[in-house]
Image 1 (cartoon, rainbow, N blue to C red):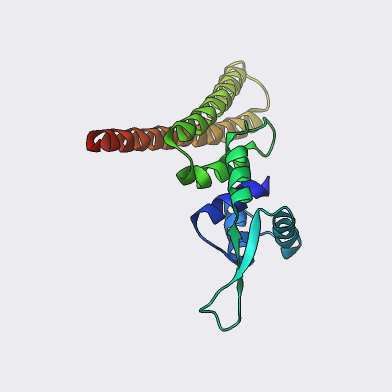
Image 2 (tube, rainbow, N blue to C red):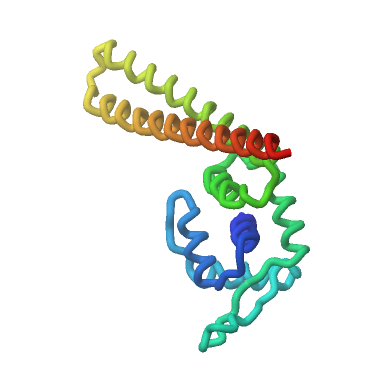
Length: 188
């Protein structure tokens, strides 16, 4: 799972393991710090598979090594970007990893990834709205545990708001892609 983000980040520039670890941690949902015990075995695996190489930073007096993606790594990155996102607890992180790599794929692929995510968000939103409606019905049925029902309603409302914010973000991103395509078409 982490390979996608690491290779995607290396599509933009060479990076140190330290920098990659910070980027990876910030892209996880929920955000967390990754240990060297996770990051460096991953980098070693990618190097062993010929997907990255290490180069020395010429301007660094400490001879810091940077990871650089190879052609094999680029091929693997494109394959990972095209794979469907599994419907499991990690799907939000995987989508976030794909979003970080969108700059490196064509607009058709960008739109497909965003549309897949939009479908997942809409599915979640529909479920949250159904639960919200059910909880409201429990309130009107004079259930005895109204404090717990109110807490459940607040929690579901947060989930609904998050889904709506995601939908707004997706729509904005798709409009940007469309505008970019139109601009490129008008140049040709």
